[in-house]
Image 1 (cartoon, rainbow, N blue to C red):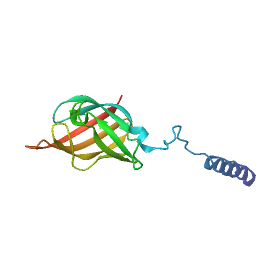
Image 2: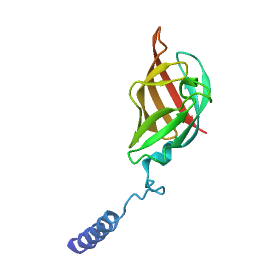
Image 3: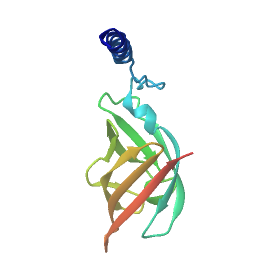
Image 4: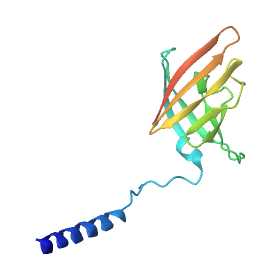
Length: 139
């Protein structure tokens, strides 16, 4: 009986050592610049306003600290100044109290999860402070 148990444990130990060398390889390496995952055209759906529109996020080539431009943020129009934001990991944050569109003051930050950014923000149009929940979906 002892001779049968010993080979069983030896095989079990070899299997355990063999499996311990396995690793989970991520097939998509992280980009050198974390802004890369935010770049491109996004479809935006806003809950409160029931608006759907597109934005374009482009890198600020002069920025060394994660800056990006967001064209048509808050559906401000393509001829409006773009919103400016900073990327840190999976978070994109608007520059504080910046003015876009028709003198709107915007604030907020979004969090990337897969191909979506959940982005709550505020928009002050001079008369009312609007609390907006937006979902960005990568196109």
